Length: 98
Image (tube, rainbow, N blue to C red; front, top):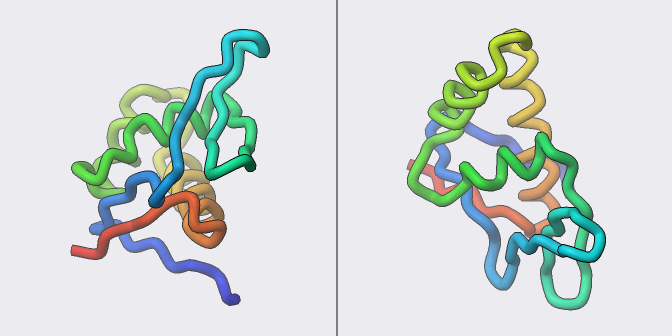
């Protein structure tokens, strides 16, 4: 399967049967699908909290750029698109095209 192309107008949200869960005993966030999960770093967690299906990728990048003024908009945009592409390729995220 080839790389997933994320467009700026897409509205990302968690995939079917995927949930974001806080695990108290490990003080960490996990992205779960069935019995499998991946631990999220703080950047991925912040990004996924914005992926509700209501905001476009472009809006999410803007929000993160305002929040993290120490980083360039280009670097944030590249990281967001790479993370979303990876998660969509794993069927953990869906990006509705508008």
